[in-house]
Structure formats: structure tokens, C-alpha cells
Length: 205
Length: 76
Image (tube, rainbow over all chains, first blue to last red; front, side):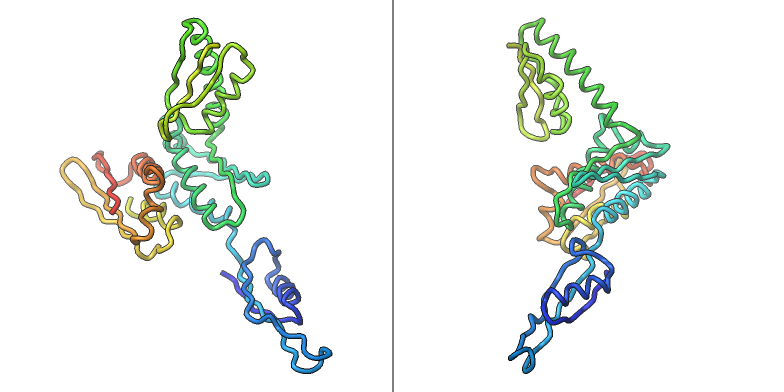
């Protein structure tokens, strides 16, 4: 961790000088004011400089990438990680020969890793990040599978004229199904049950 | 496996120095016992055990030093 103490005529000046020394911007640091300083009479007598302590904060995304890499390494999986950031949405693309191990049955291992990375990244960060872990296009493939499932199950609900219950899924997967069936005026979708058993119900109208 | 559990837990707690993982191997299963500072217990268990469940999912997926035995993770 890098840290500097800087002084200046005002707090802003001191912070500015610290930023230049650390070669960074305000978003990446924690600022602690040690002395607010005093102007003094006519700026001549009894003036005291402002003193601030500025600490360079660790980059949460880099830390998260390191966290993921270490976990995979200890699971004895060689992995390549590519990071993509769009505003507060961070996507980690994993690729590996043993990618199936990282995905798990219906993505459960991938989802567990995603949740843990989400927790650690948002613990240290000041902004809220949405974390997505993807492994060799798994999320896209899963989305297609879920859409096909949604259409098939809605047809079934219409045919038997009864509610159809799907198996429990995490929130972002349920959303895919809700969205897929939004346009269909003959069925309604809702979620029922408590996490982690929350599941979709497709109801014919 | 011990280091894997420590790696997963360390960034989630306030007192990383108090994490300890012990391993006991029985005939059919291996039990890892995780203890953390009293104040951090909630953080490694999570709402409805969500964090604990995520940690378990990952260690079950990892097949290192298990001799094909069932793995258990005890917290506290």
C-alpha cells in the first residue's frame, strides 16, 4: 500500500500535491485530514499549513482477478482470465481446459465463485459493482437453453391449461425466463418460494 | 485444500489473522473445520447460509488431496 503525507496552504492544495506525488486521481485514494491549517492574519502571521495523509487504495478489480486466479490455481485448474468493464458491470471471462470443473452442474460452481467475487469486490470498493463470471461463453449458451425451456414450458402450460413450475434458479436466470415470456400474452410468469429455492411459475391466462 | 479454504475466506472477513482450518481424515470422509473470529462468523455463513453454501460448492468441486473421500466443511 502506498501512502504519502502532503501539506499545502489549504486542504485542497495539500490533496492536490499528494495526488501529483502518487500520480493518481481522487477516485483511487482515501484521504485523512491531519491538520486543516490556518490562514493567519492577513496571511502573514500565525498561518499554519494544512496537512493530509493520502493512501492509495487497491484497485478492487485487480484484487478480484487475483482472488479468482488464486482459487483456480489451488483447485489445480490452469485458467486464463480476461476482464471486461462497462461502467459498474465487471465481467470476468474464464477459459481453461478444465472449464467444466469451474462451471459445475447447471453452473453451480460458477455461480458460487461469482457470488464470492461479488462479496469481496464490494467489501473494499466504494462504488457498487455487478460481477459476472463467464466461462467460455457459458452464460450465452445457458441463456439460449433457458429461452428454449421457457418457450417449451409456456406451450405446455397453454396445452394443459394449468400452472407449470420450473426448478429453482438464481435471480439472473429467472430474469431470462421472465423476459423471454414477457411478449407472450397467453401466459403470465411469476416467482415463488424463498431463495435459494425460488422458482418460476408459468400460468396460462 | 486447506489453503484453498483460507484463500476463499480471507478477503471476506475483518480479522484474517484469526482464521484457522484444521483437517481430520476419517475412514470415509475428510472433515475440514473452519474457525474465524466471533465477529466474522456471520460473514462466512451469510444470509440463509448463502456464503457457507458457496464455499462448500467450490471445495466439493475441487478434487485435490481427497483420495476420493467425501469432503465436509464445518464452520465453527
